[in-house]
Image 1: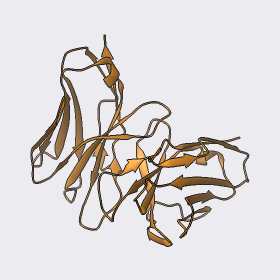
Image 2: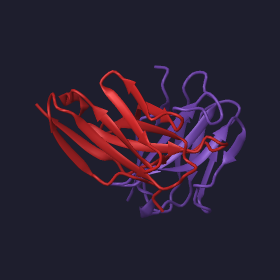
Image 3: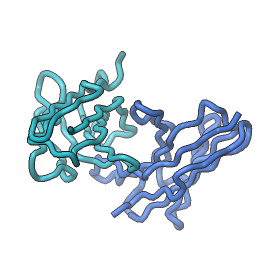
Length: 113
Length: 114
């Protein structure tokens, strides 16, 4: 039962262009969402998050958009850089007493110089 | 290095042996989470612990797996009588409080079963 889904296993983007990574969820109790970036042989590194009371959060080149009615969120990276090449995981939690994160299966982003 | 420390980074065991994975949380964090990642999959929650307490073990297999976080020392994830299907990357995360986000992850232990 995959409650967080990332339907694109991979994405290739030219350096300088926008990268858009998508994530869908099924559990309406989720109210906090995070994006993690992962390099090979390393642990996930927190990137950006958003609470369900917002529909957008921005941090430098990274912006996360949340559409609660569609149960969909997306991560925009602009401009994309070769160092952004990694696997990106979407994660969700229900803050009301829950502590564990539910992860998607990841999207491998390749930024082509 | 004040980050989450996991050791060993790689662990090889034969079927039937025991595997012990260790995790020291970030300085100031008293909440530890264990996740497992199978090849080509996302991370799956296993267990959440505070010092000397298991708070949520809903993701732990019912047999052979156990976890502890003693008053002193690192958190330990123990897998007894390992089988080939236990081969995976095991990640530990920590946070300063219950439900506090984000969780900060270690670099994982890659367990291989021969």
